[in-house]
Amino acid sequence: MRRGIWYAVAAYIIWGFIPVYIKQLDNVPAPQLLSHRIVWSFLCLLIVILAMTRFAAFGESIRNARILKIYFLAAMLIGVNWFTYVWAVGSGFIVEASLGYFINPLISVLLGVFFLRERLRIWQWVPIFIAGAGVAFLTYAYGKIPWIALVLAFSFGFYGMVKKKGELDSLDGLTLETGMLLLPALIYIAFMELNGRGVVFHAEVSTIMLLMGAGVITVVPLLMFASAVKKIPLTTIGILQYIAPTLQFLVGVVIYKEPFNLSKLIGFGIIWFALIIFGIESWIHHKAQPVVIDIE
Image (cartoon, rainbow, N blue to C red; front, top):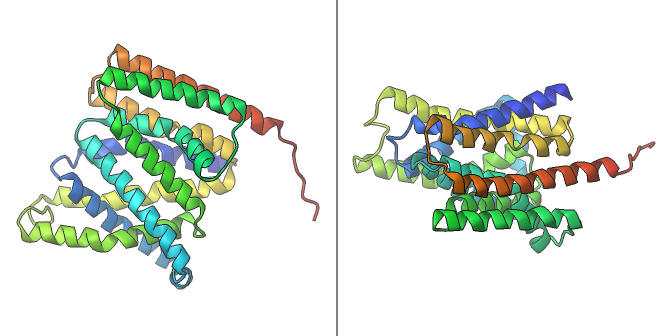
């Protein structure tokens, strides 16, 4: 179990500092950065599958039309999520992007209610209403709806809901998703290169290496997280998941000096308070569940 916790912590720390990595590629337009992330992520995932001698099983599993439909939708959602995040970081909205991943667990709960007919306990509704008040306050403070946070939260929330209906594990699933996005990404990269606006033949070697590394920083934390989920309870994962947006928030405020005034502090504080209630309620409910012993 201890190893699983360390895997989870390491994955969330990597995700938390991804803005620093993306900032090193400020000279690469967001659509090209996204396209390269898709290409190099797919290649990394494919290498892992080949190394694990799982390619034949992977090829067999993706012949099912239902699986292809589910993961095509998942691919579209993760594409929207990745593009929004890359653009937000490059445009100086790391703090608002972190807000999206703070409220994502609550959005996922709401999606479960409306689309999967899941029932909420009374004390689960309380943090949702409080978080809604926090978003409303931030809308007033910003003078506009915090659309970056909402797009990230809802796209990832819908992504998780779609994946819930999928039958592939995280490695095969992400390989299929990036594979579905691969052709459009390659076409876009080729188009930009032919028009003299690409980065492959017009950038420094360091930039090319960083673009290739985007695949590694996508795959490594994913594999760590997949291993952690098998070793530790989901309640522990639920608590640890806030490491990533907390680090992203600190990176935005401390390293890149993004503005964070009193109004934003109040809005974030309301949402953090909602998350504390949500976490405590989930922990208490989990502890109250009877232990089931399988004697078969």
